[in-house]
Amino acid sequence: MPVHYDVWFRAMINILPMSSKYRFMEATNLEAATCPYARCQDVETPRHVLHDCTCVRVLWQAHRSAWQKVGVDLSWDMCMSIDLITPPEHLRNFTDTILWMHRNRVAHQDAVGPQIERMTFDSMVQWSGLVRAALRDTEQSLHSKVQILTVVALLSEDTKYSDAQANNNNIFSAFALPRKIRATSPTSSMPSSHRL
Image (cartoon, rainbow, N blue to C red; front, side, top):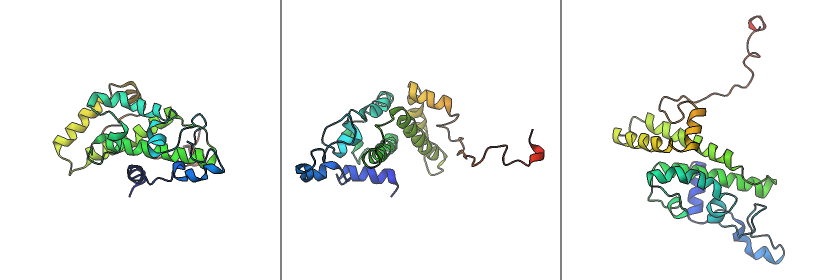
């Protein structure tokens, strides 16, 4: 099971290893069950750390304004619904995974609070990969592809999505090619006779 589906499934059935599962330890450590983010002292539950915490709520709000145009509210209940298998499902799964991985860095590696702008962009880029895959899929019906393109067009009216599209040509296009990151600088791989 891909990581993003695994995190979502575990959150849905409440088996993520959260601090709230260790409330018995509060007798010796008063912060045993609290949220790992420094500015928050609430009990850590899947709903709290992935959706409701004041430190992560901004990430959902960044997507919510765009998705409301297509009738998706990105509430916790919608996010945990197994019946809502639509394009937002993938965004939800990527967002949950990004938040869960960052929560683990904060809880176990002393990282700082969430970098919302970066996480918003990362979740959009990862979701756009699934959009491109769906548009390239020969098994996908034309009607389904038109629906996806309609959703993308509506999302692109939002500033964050239009900025992502402006900075990453064809991010939501079936014609976008995967990018390769060079291991070395362009000039170091050239023979010295070809360098200026």
